[in-house]
Image 1 (tube, rainbow, N blue to C red):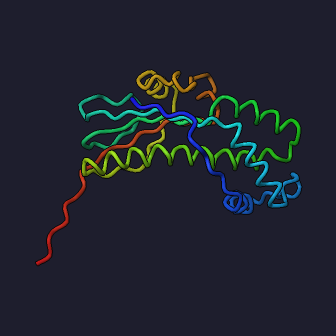
Image 2: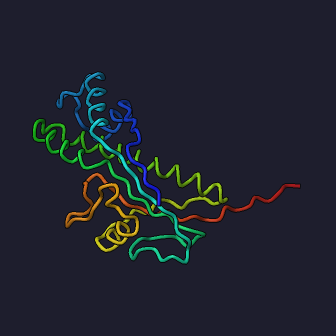
Image 3: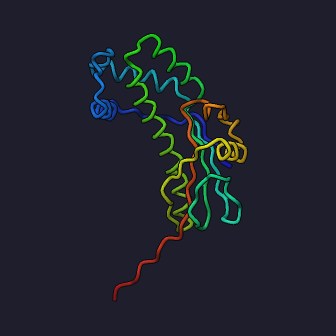
Length: 190
């Protein structure tokens, strides 16, 4: 099992602006219309986030947790990623102080969690390539029993992730699996 805590997130304000525009969110109405205001706010969010991941790879004969979809392959990897517990408190305080920022905050935190997932995905992909494998698409794990099994197997408490009636805690957390598939050999052209 590998655990990585406190890696750096890089929230790019142009990307956030693009996502906000696509979601039809008026940044000016929430006081974030200027590039400097948005960049400063993103730095505050980055400072509050404590991204962490925990993951491990298993041979195919090790049963995947019930409900965790995996494609038959040479191995599979289970992962849990989180933005940390402080981001939930920050989100609540931010939305209660400035309700107009609720939607843009959801967009920003979704982008941050995507970066955390991308971080662990790159690490697993390196390992898979060393074994001449490719990874299946991400299979997100949902449902109480599968999440509980994954958190138990990976010891999610080591990065502060637990299961509650509402799902994973902290809220900005996710669990997923990846299957390792044999890379097809290319035919030599003569």
